Image (cartoon, rainbow, N blue to C red):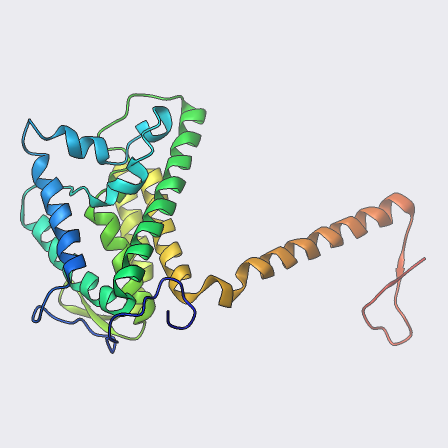
Amino acid sequence: MRGGNPFQGGRGAGLGGDFMGLSGPVPRDLWILLGVIFGTFTLQFFQATAWLPALLRLTPLVWRSGFLWQLATYPFIGMGAPNFWFVLELLILFLFGRSVLSRLGSRGFWKLLLSATLVAGVVAALVGVLSDVMTGPGPPPSSSLILMQGQRMVLTILIAAFATMNQHATILLFFVLPIQARWFLFLEILFAFLGFLGTHDLAGFIGLCVAVGFTYGALTGWRRQNWVRRARLRLQQQWLSLKLKWMRKRRGIHVVRDDDDRPGPWLH
């Protein structure tokens, strides 16, 4: 592992911040990922096999009927119509996936993809449970959690990973507009929000945001940032401050400063 990051494996050369292009051998892991997505995408258009991708997509049946396997399978079930846009999504997935795989290695690649998938799925399911509690459960709609289904979630994770590891690389947005890779983290959230406006899929929107945040945090190092410890210390400081104010009012305690007017009050 490099830099102590558990998501970075020992295999794979550096990128220098650019795509590796379409030439050269394609890693076996990427063939497997693309093959599974394309295969499950194809199955949904045949009556005899459509039940399988329907069973593996993320649906409200996760929390209503205990279909927990959907939390791990939903990103690998191809979604959409058989048109140019699906092919374009696979092409973009190939470009980003090849670059990320080269940087992380096979083990780090799959660990990141599966971890972000599971965390985002669990959070989306919790949002769905809360929605059922507030509005009452209904039949599982086919459009539920649509924003984070299939290759869309995989794309979100891979683009976020590339943007995190190559923040100053230049990417052509829509193959035309040059933008630094780091801005794609915010663009992903923006596009997810626009999708939410069109679908009202709150759980899917939050799931995508969690996937972006988890990917960024995992690749920049949770421990090195120490953000959990700092947040806990801030909460403790606020709690002690509120407790001290309550004690002053309750027991008539007042605060006076020392002769040098420095912090560190004396209680009388």
